[in-house]
Structures are given as structure tokens and as C-alpha cells.
Length: 367
Image (cartoon, rainbow, N blue to C red; front, side, top):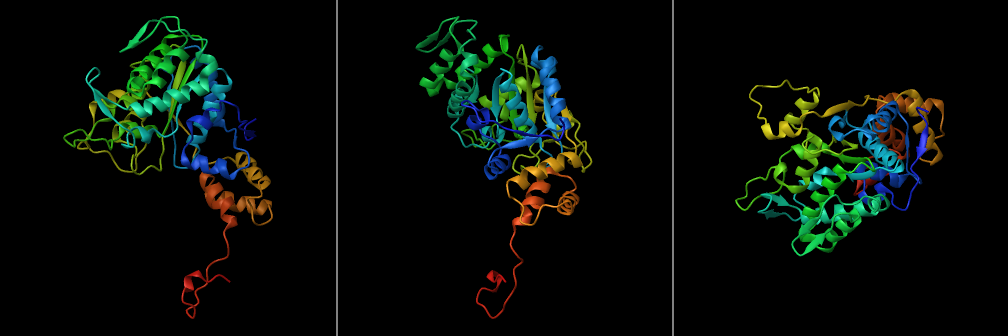
């Protein structure tokens, strides 16, 4: 089973189709005629966690962050988890780019009721995607209590789809509806819930949002990051389910913060100093997270399956031989991203440029 290539079968309510995916993974899926992945040992470990205690217990004991070096397949493992849970009748909530909640690309307004900055547009989009992906499951889950929002009231016993449709009808109350939806999902036990977040480290960095005095707004003062962090920290939980995040190592704008690194016990090349500034609230929001470390490279069996996938896609310029496979596997050190982008796809590059000083644009001369 380990090392076997699996195909992502597109469905009418495919979570990756409606929630989206990280940019590097999106590019790979566009190059391939059919998106697929490799079953690795880490995939089996994650399935055992989700299919075991997490399916029957609360999310407080199952708050996992996928860690590892750049290009080791953290985002792919998270997508595999999302696809698996969706196929197993879970309610799936997937945030493929957590940086979009803190990079000031969506509207934010101050809410006196909660004393936080709400993000109505982002909440509205999230509600719409949750409804499309999980409609059949949400229709079978009744609300536990009556919800009143200004001029609208949702009676107890109504399906959760009714609650979401109220938020879709009015963007102004979408953040409050989303918060109540999470609370309802946390109390019900009919379906386990998966909250998956890629680029998880961005939630613990300085945001690009500014208040009226142009001071930076902390992530836990924004409605969307705060909602995710409350479930990640265990302050709020799902009766059945898990919270899974993935670190994005290549994001230079939102790198891994010292607070999150210390809680996850991630090795840092630079020695820690007692003078490094830390945030007590962020340390609390990161408390209790369990790291799932991915290996630095592919095994020969896993790399061979990956090689066969791209070979079948005609992505190799030279003839596919054992010598070519071993050469690219050695060059990349087994790193999945390096093996694909600089190894296999690197064979598609043209001949080297030749400088001819007699031509006006010598750098453009190709033999």
C-alpha cells in the first residue's frame, strides 16, 4: 500500500475544488491531467489518527500540526486528510491559505459586541463553501437552540443549512452566523468535524491589518484567525473530530514565529536568546498542539511511484530509464518538491544559451 499512487476522483462537491489549494499544489494539479498523490507512511499514520480515536473523541486531544522541511509534502498530506475525511462522511472545513485571513486583503470592521474586528466578506465566502461541500450532512444536523440575529431568527430544531442561508443573505451578520455554526458543529455528535488549515503559522504572525491609529492589529483580535485559534488551542472543541494544520516553510512574509516554534519544539538553526520577544497570548493559543514531523525525503519506493506518474504524463524529455531515475533522485536528495520541479520537470528545459557578441541581443541566441 505504501508507495502506491492514488487518484483524486473529482466529485460534485469536491472540497479542493471549492475551498481551493495552496499555489504549489495547484500548479502541480494543473500540469497533471488527473490530480493524484502517493501514499506514504505519514499518510497511513494520519489515517490511523483520524480513523481511530479522533472519529469518536473530542478535538481537544487531536490538535495536530504537520511540520517538516520545505518541500516534504505537508500540504499534500493535509489535502489527503481532507479528501479522506470527506469520503468518510465527515463535515470538512478547509482553509488552504491561512495568510489570506491576516494579509489585509478583505474588509474588516470593528464590532462593539465582541470587541474584535470582524471580516464579513471572508466569513460570507467561508459559509458558502461550507454549505456547498457539506450540504447533505448539514441538512441532517438540527440546531440545538434558537438563534436571533437582529431581524432574523432561526428556531431550534432547524437544519444547519437554514442557519447558513441566513448568513448568506446578509454579509453583515455572516461572522456571527459562522461563529454560531462552529458552536453548533462542536455540540453535535452525528458527524465528526475536520478543521484543516494550511499555512497555519501565519495565524501566529504580525498581521497586515491596521486600526484607525495605524497600529498593527493582533491576529487574535480578528474574527477569522481568532475563531481558528480558539479551536487550535482547545479553548473551544468539537465533540467529535480533529483540528489539523500544516506549516508553510516557504512563506517569507509570514514565517514560523518563535512562539509557535517553541510550542511545537521545532529545531532552529539559530540559538534562542532570553531577549527574544515572545507573546503570552500567542503562547496560550499554541498550547497543547501536537507536531507530526514529516521525513526529509521520499523512500526509493515512493520516488519510483512518483516517477511513474510523471513518466505516464509524458513530462520527461529524455527516455525514462533507471539511470535517469537514480540521477534525479540523488540530485534532489529525495525531497519531493525538488525531485518533481528541478528533477523531472527540469528535463524539459531547452539547450543552454550561447553568447554571440555579433548579435544585438546575444543573451537571446539559442543554438
